[in-house]
Amino acid sequence: DLPEMPPCKGSVYINKVGVSNLEQLYIHQGHMQWLWDVDGRRYLDLFAGVATVSVGHCHPKVTEAAEKQLRKLWHTTNIYVYSPLHEYTEKLAATLPDPLKVIYLTNSGSEANDLAMLMARLHTGNFDVITLRGSYHGGSPLTMGLTSNAAYKYPVASGLGCHNTMCPDVFAGPWGGSNCRDSPVQTIRDCSCPQGSCTANDKYIGQLNEVFATSVASRIAAFFAEPIMGVGGAVQYPKNFLKDTYKLVRERGGVCIADEVQTGFGRTGSHFWGFQGHDVIPDMVTMAKGIANGFPMGAVVTTPEIAASFAKGVHFNTFGGNPVACAIASSVLDEDGTQQISHDVGTYLLTELAKMRDKYEIIGDVRGKGLQIGVEMVKDKASRKPLPPAAMSEIFEDTKDMGVLIGKGGVYGQTFRIKPPMCITRDDADFFLAVFNQALHNYME
Ligand code: PMP
View (cartoon, rainbow, N blue to C red):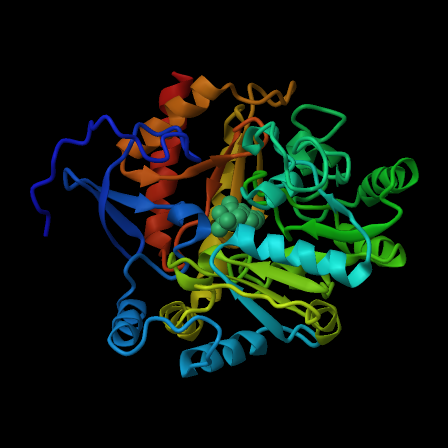
């Protein structure tokens, strides 16, 4: 089903500087875990539009739900209510623990985090926000201030009441994996404990206390963190780090926000929400990406108490929670088995990749949970210095040429990221492992 396409080398480049350095790839069609380019080449998509296509490209049931709604009602904005909105918000609320039951629908993750930050400031009467080094929370002027990685910042006003996005009212906190203060490529495995269960918590809580002691962050509005970092390179925190941090932030009057833009909707495998793996209940949860399988949508879910502080003004969002988005998001929630696939195939991939880590000197770390996986590449295991960009690109391109699309992340772009649609099979995993193994072998030769 491939039409005649014009040559791909136009003079207009859209998103030329994207999250990947792949030679511009013109994608024509998608089905479940597969993508086809304009030349008819098929790729196994292990990046899913950055963890966004949650249940599969053009998933038949989701497409059917969208088509049905498109014939009925597209839009009224939130001046009226409509049944897809009711149906969806009830279903979404049922996935979250009490008291997280008040839902605001937006169109993207940045919008959701903007809104969460506004609510936190209104509710607490405080201004300062703490995020973690290596974090990414959005590309809007406000959320750019929350994002710690300088690569995603522009040196212009952040909208945070200061001169640039490196502003002093947002503090990149203690833990940032590869972006850690002590070493250019420090990862959780530097503590030589099993990945995901690092116990070096005191060190990072100590750094957080330093932030409190040496800055105006004693009046905190909010602490933002992903349950497992996404763009930062699948960085996991020491055991109890989030739990202890939530306590410290709350003692200082702040609210705790879980950015589940990447980790939500079963992606971490063992839990539907990433925060559930940390034994915490946030005051707000922000979400987007996988919420609607690639259709633009986001949400903030919070408590009635925080919502009451916000209710003093009028919140308006023209497209947020439109009927089509709600119908699509609803059918995503109806899809059975995605979390299980994430758990089973993710665990298999993590186990097999760990074997490759032991085999290859240039794999410094394999980490993550479920289908939120990072493979950190190093020059060698002793120096733990990041594998240079040119080498990363060589492996990346080779993998693509053999028919598999993966992502890149980490502060130095040194971490390969694997976060496929949650419909992949064990055979797909084996195909990827063979291709990746070959690409590493080719590079080492
Ligand atoms: N939070 C996280 C954790 C993200 O990964 C992203 C996007 N990469 C965002 C927020 C921003 O989402 P959006 O691009 O939909 O605005």
